[in-house]
Image (tube, rainbow, N blue to C red; front, side):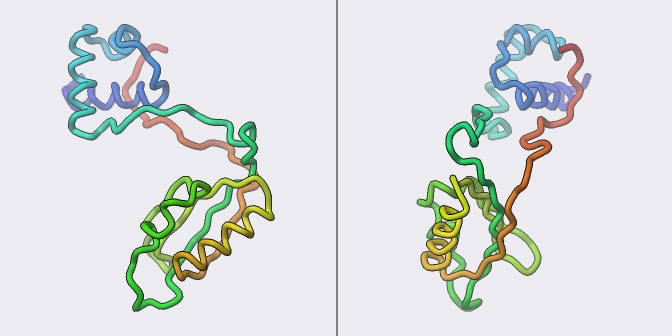
Length: 153
């Protein structure tokens, strides 16, 4: 494996299981523990690995409804600051700048349709936008790990 391939294998393994020990990670990519530790630290310093997180069951937390909200400004001449205006709303998990008719795509998680309706009203009034909303019925997969050159398992 080349240098870039090893780094991809490390990232792939950690994206599948961020709790891997350096020993297990070293076995998977065929390096010593100290070499893997050094590479992971370098990947973190370069911003390739930006952090580690838990996979959460949102329904178990009382937030079973996921929706995607595509927004665009009501007034196209208004400042393009919707992400900043909406950043304080905890129901918005992600905000993506997108190409096409819409400016941003928001991924939101709420407890009920009534809560979604209230959130949409707040989004409209806070950011001065119109929206199209798509409710998620089920999630066959999400947050898939990066495909890589990892062997073993």
